[in-house]
Image (cartoon, rainbow, N blue to C red; front, side, top):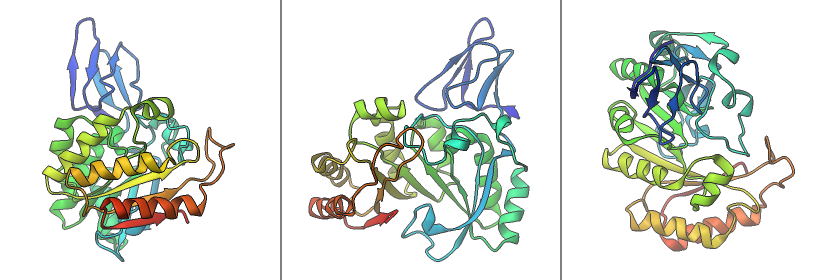
Length: 288
């Protein structure tokens, strides 16, 4: 682990993390909500650094990215932890644990870049859990990757503060951002987050001219209202995102929503039509 970026030292060995909108204030020995950043004697430590829980070689389309380097392979990595508590989490066996509880690989940024190149990958993806929680390792790896001709991909919930995101945009070539719900109250209830910071993330990525695709997982009884989907797509169109690909993904029972049914195909198809009529130009369907 290393000293974390983006935090303020307060009195009595208390620190305030300013990496994401939770802005956790932590006493000595306490982890942030991400389960990754820990206050040790007044120094915020990134316990995720070099402690990877998952590595995979994936088609870029699996991220999902439909229009960025199609047909290529990407070297996917993650560390344990997440700054959300999504009831529908598809990777809860790693996202809801501390890095020290789920470390399977010890690697340096240079190791990751070497392995990506050795396996014929054209990019590195920071994915599976929330990459913001292993920000320092992602940043150092992405910088090394860029210097050696690899592209960098961040698959994220978009819950990150402006300054860290601006700094990251220098090295991240493509983002897929989960725009989970078009409702602040649902964000709070289902994921323990909020909507506006995610919308701000979309705007910052667009301003920095990075590639962006958006994913919306449609969950029965939570965010499957066509009025909600129409309002979301209208905001995207009104704010200049009509040409950015949007992925509507089909929910299947996971984690704390095991009693919720699969999303019907008809709902996914209807969402596609609503998005198309509203003005979105590139619409993709996932988990079908």
